[in-house]
Length: 112
Image 1: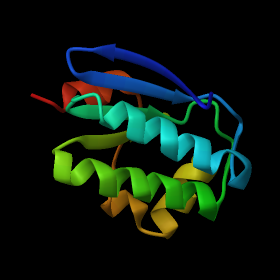
Image 2: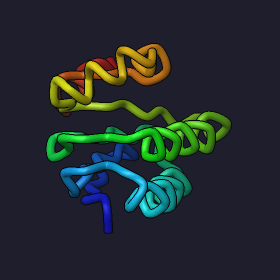
Image 3: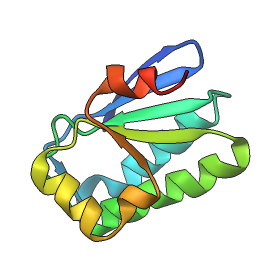
């Protein structure tokens, strides 16, 4: 299990548990995300609070999850990114693809 999942009012907070988001757990992450998205929710907030390192295979799984979510009208927000992870996502322009927030509360506040 890669994600700790909590659901409330069709919003899921999914916390990535491992410190390294890499090839070794990318497929499991993708499968768990697809399972969560398939539940009929409207938003998945993915917390990176434990993640110190992320590689391209894990980023690929994140994009696959987004491609699965989009036709189902499910949004994916990213929260609690450590500086190195956030800098990488900004460098490769993933901040233009995903909405990124400081924390869960800020992401929820954006829902209006």
